[in-house]
Image 1 (spheres, helix red, strand yellow):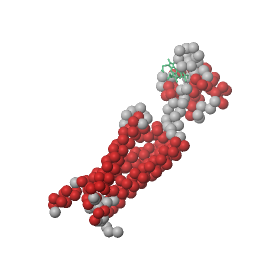
Image 2 (cartoon, protein in one colour):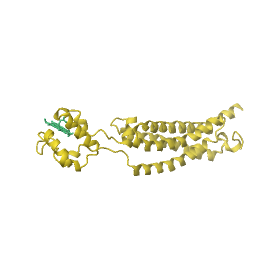
Image 3 (cartoon, helix red, strand yellow):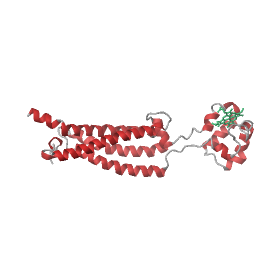
Image 4 (cartoon, rainbow, N blue to C red):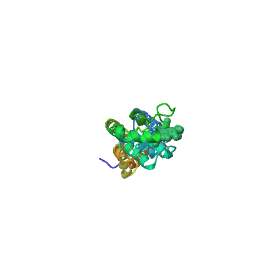
Length: 247
Ligand code: HEC
């Protein structure tokens, strides 16, 4: 083991076929990263209803949108004046408890009947709020990603992406003239961010604050792999010509 790779094992001195192989792979990887970015913007990115990835998007995707049912929004909005505070509180509490059906007939039906029934009756033209089924339409709480789908996505992601990085980092490990600490940091970074990324999805499911970690990890991948891909391409194609000219 020498400090700087030498001979055939450095990027500027690779044979043409190997260089072509690596280049093809890195270009496809760069395209793949770009597509991953586009896909994130289109799926998670629109979770909060606005284009562009934000912390809210990550929170909505993994944690869900738990306190924000239509019922609650209306009760603190245009329906605020329709019921006295103690009745509104009763409804909100019931909604946050997961709107148990057991409490409907005895406790909740009378509250809705008394305050809302005059307008939201069966034939008033407004959405009826007369039965458990009609009321719960407005209190669907979005619990975010399920644990089983998180587990599935996590293991696919861990295996698949680690494999990809073995090649990207492997090619970059043949780069020359880069301080060893920097080279090792760049190689370690995607693997570390991969673990942070998957960890942050699970944590965001329970505590929305961890969404910042998801975005940090995503940016980390993009920066570290972008750096490695560009450096590798440069050392395979441009550096050899410069070295040939100056010698
Ligand atoms: C005086 C009549 C009136 C009463 C009483 C009333 N509402 Fe409404 N409600 C309306 C009207 C009109 C709309 C449609 C306009 C709007 O959304 O503000 C509406 C809309 C709503 C919506 C949104 C429906 C949708 O399609 O998105 C909800 C939820 C709602 N009301 C809940 C309640 C609850 C709960 C109560 C009782 C605490 C209540 N309303 C009492 C007149 C009333």
